[in-house]
Length: 158
Image (cartoon, rainbow, N blue to C red):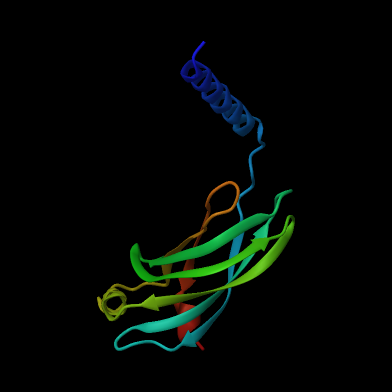
């Protein structure tokens, strides 16, 4: 028997074994994400830079390793801020970590949001969606989403 059919059979068995291993893995609960701080950072020209602090909680039996992060904040269905970081780390099993991700708000995105507020329509709240991912690790990227609303009436009373 030649080497080529043996290699093909071995690769097929390996693929089947890997699929079976993935199917046998229990589902993971989603990560819990909370914004715990926003601090100004140095920007360039017309951009606004912020350091966003996130508390990532891992309610799973295994640690989540990551090698890079990405973050996007949409307000009123429009992108307001985006950011990336090449930081490496781990969120321990049944534990939490604080990540600091620098984000940028372009002048155009800020103007777009200001126009929405100034259009005369009375709004008490503005919806937001925070999306992100922890890249890398043994199981690939882990994505997270946090949705909510900003209470504008409470902000203007301060």
